[in-house]
Image 1 (cartoon, helix red, strand yellow):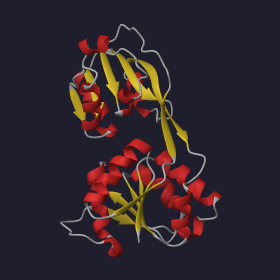
Image 2 (cartoon, helix red, strand yellow; image 1 turned 90 degrees about the vertical axis):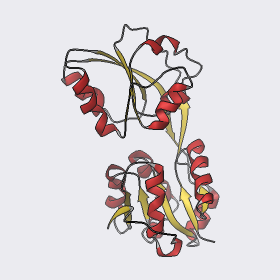
Image 3 (spheres, helix red, strand yellow; image 1 turned 45 degrees about the vertical axis):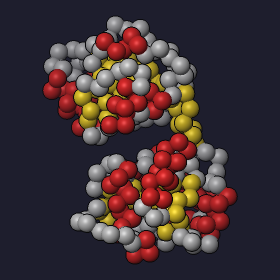
Image 4 (cartoon, one colour; image 1 turned 180 degrees about the vertical axis):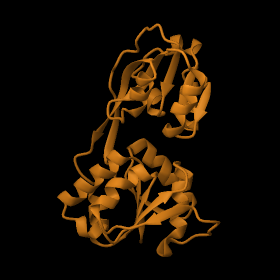
Length: 251
C-alpha cells in the first residue's frame, strides 16, 4: 500500500486523514508538532480590536473567559478561525483568506492609532505585529498556545519511508516542515525523502523543503487544506480525477 504522510498536529491531522479517506487515499499520521495551551491570561485592556491568525487561538485558551472580547471587532485569518471564535460567542468582523491579506485590510480600516489585542502562538512569525506597530498602532500579545516539536517520527512513518511506501508528504507550516526534515535526517532518511513528492501549503512552507535539495515540491494554488489535497491528483501513483491545474510544481 502507498500512503499519504500527514505531518500536522494530531487534531488537525485526524481531520485531514478523514478527508483523505473520502478521496480514496490511505493516510499515515506522524505529527511533528504538538499544540498545547500556553496558559496566558487574557489582558483586560482597554482594546479597540482583536486579531487572531489561527483557530488554535480559540481552541487552546485553557478555559479563559473571552466574553469580554465579544464587544470588540474581531479580525481573523481563515473560516476555521472564525468558527472557533464563534464557539466562544465571538463574531468575526472580517475574515481574511490568509495572513498576507490581513494587514492591508487592517490598514484600510484603522488609519488612526489603534489598540490591538493579538491572540497568538508562542512560535510565530512577527511580521504582523511589527507592521502594525510601524503604522503607529499599539499591539498587546497574548500567547495563548504553543507548538512543541515532537521528539521523533512515528515508527510507522519511519518504516514506510524506509520501505518506499510513502507516495506524498503533506506540509502545513514552515516550522513543521523544518522539524520534519530534521527528524527524518536523524533517522537516516534524508536520501529517501528525495524520492518522495512534498506538498506544501504555501511558498513559505516550501522554502525549507527546496533548501533540502532534490525533492519534488508542489505548492497549493491557495493556502488551504482543500487546495493542498487537490495536488495529489498530479501524482502518477496517486492519480484521481483532475480539473485544471491545482498546484504549482518546482524542483
